[in-house]
Image (cartoon, rainbow, N blue to C red; front, top):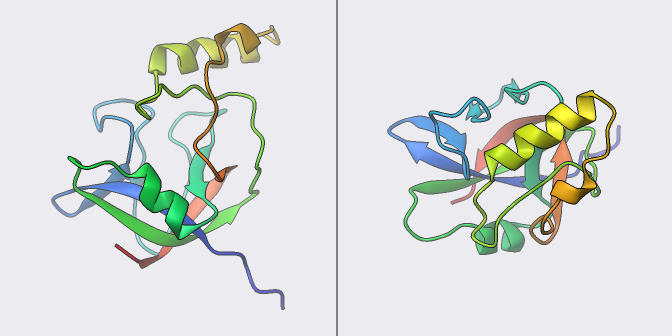
Length: 135
């Protein structure tokens, strides 16, 4: 049996809840994570984000949030993904993402909406299972 590659997920900690790191818990894109359970995106047509290295996950986290980093397993990891927007402050601009999803669904061009790149060594995937708390 082949050993599965380990990835790293940054999450916000709200009391005992683990949620998306850069998206408000009041938003439909926000995902709630649970240890040892496969979690899928809350909005159809989107992906979840992880890091290839612990160092990159640490560099991504900012002071001010109550956060944690977990080792995780993923389904369908991809290093390139065409529907992403992130500001220089790592906040997801949801208006842009929603516009991209709408245009993508209509099979229309949306590259004019893409601003910026994913953080270093980001991998997108179809599902995440948190396996072990690191930080």
